[in-house]
Length: 144
Image (cartoon, rainbow, N blue to C red; front, side, top):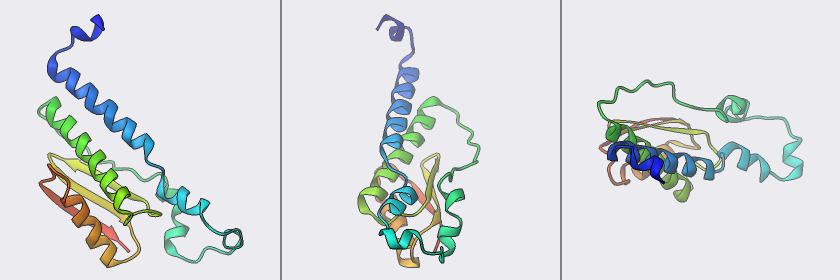
């Protein structure tokens, strides 16, 4: 405990936020893997037809390459917490279950990318993301 007493308050908050964000991220099962496990045995042997499935190996490892410029640790920690909160909200709602959706945040502006089942699902996912406290705006780059 004495080791953490030497850290500044903002550093301690940042560390706590990052630990919470990583813990929440690891607790959320990956959508495409979960969907494949729920397929009936006969469907698993069928040829892949949808374009989403043909890109599944790339989608399962979807991530953002965006580089952010932060002026403070607090802003970076806030964005990490918003990413986690939006991921949890989308999972709880179910609109993105079974789809690889990437959530990124830069200065409270959330960007969601990936593929979902329909235009209505893409619109609904953006509404879910925008309902999270602290989200200033949502860039909806979802396709279907």
